[in-house]
Image 1 (spheres, rainbow, N blue to C red):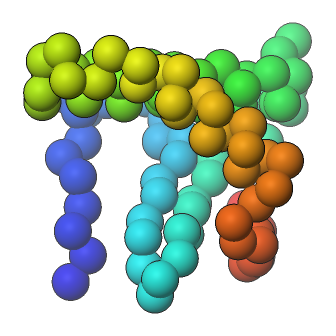
Image 2: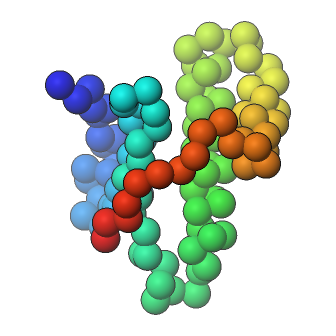
Length: 101
């Protein structure tokens, strides 16, 4: 049984909302579903848009950590940034799988 998260109220209210990313830990690995190509007919570059999405996601994680345990994670964003860059430079696992549009 998949343990899904609740869809945010704003996403339910906004008829133009678009799910961009889902991530699971399954079979001892990370599995992702991405909405890719949404920026093809816009002035934004896909890479830059995803950079913003990932940065915003990191800030949401930091906020969640602080809401869950106030004051216990003062260096959370710095630690996330450091690990992110470390993983980009020296991945702990390969990226596998197919791309489905």
